[in-house]
Length: 509
Image 1 (tube, rainbow, N blue to C red):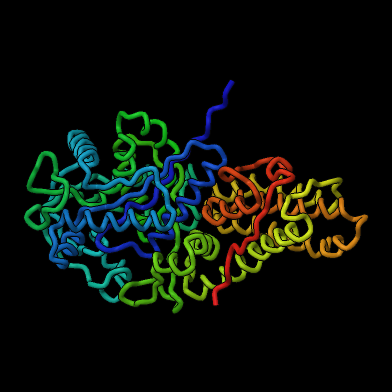
Image 2 (image 1 turned 180 degrees about the vertical axis):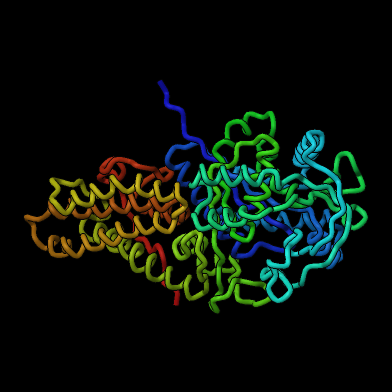
């Protein structure tokens, strides 16, 4: 009997296209891509979604400021995200756009159902509205008169909107979070939402007057109103799968894992969980919440502050795999952390050039020098080799366990510890001295093979993070085909294979 494959549905945020992609976008998308690649390598059935959120007042204002037609503006900016993911080797199975007809149909369907069920009503609303965050805010959220994330203070507005009865789901959401403590990761963000749920969250304004904002999906029963951008955008997670009747929705949605930044935590909990309850959707399995990326000055990266690193420029200067590795390794997911040019150089020179790159160069050079560039066949192994074999056999499960918890920095470190063990093995066995002793030829064969096979294990385990560099490493080890996963020791590298010299990670100067 064939065992059913495990399923995973990984989503990035649906990015707002009022500007070009920045490092925060790259950070979330690369993490989602690395997670998806690890799951695929382990044999799971994976579907990865990314996309663009293209409605709302901020979009309309940005298009007007650029002097462009709104549709042309979002088409252009959506293409910038598509180009960025191609350059950063982020490979979603689908890029959803909220201006697509299929998505609009799902939004209209959900709105109509909720309206007919009495979950939507019309009322006049007066309050403070943040254009930057596309939502009404409260006085207690403001710092010196504005949200910390916004450049401008909120505007006072009074208008007639349609409201979704979000408050009636507050107790249900609190109970669900209590019953599913693993739902939001890391746990400090769950605690933050539980704290918010101790007080009324109110109902959610889900429409805007078309007389003020025409750029949006019309309310099905009232063309004088358009749908609030967040109610629209959150539904893209299911519209992309063909909700409600397509097989992809039935297969993948029950295993949904959202990857987001903490600046959109409330929308993905208070808004999205209440919407799921009202629609009858089982909530996502995990909400993986990242912290903020900080510039070299220790402040949150900001265009206005000019303290950010452009991800596309960094990828061109250092190489995309070095950028991917640094983003995954440097900042533990869920925490704030600094990404700067200095950090990129340190990771490139220390972890990659000194540790992994030096290991590959030395090992291959010794095979070139002592065995004419052919991988030798190992003879009997000793305690040193067995310790490495045991560690290599345990690594895939440990790495996958870290990936499941979105601890990708830990997953990388597990492999890099093994890299350092291999470097220590060279110091312990001193192959250059074995090469001088004719009676140690078999021992030298074992040492050289152990190093090459160890490098094969490293290449396979780091391929989701650095797909191009690790494929190159495999090729220089004489291996063909794609990177593997959990391949038994000794069944990867074949004796007699031709190995080729390699400078895997040139140092930055």
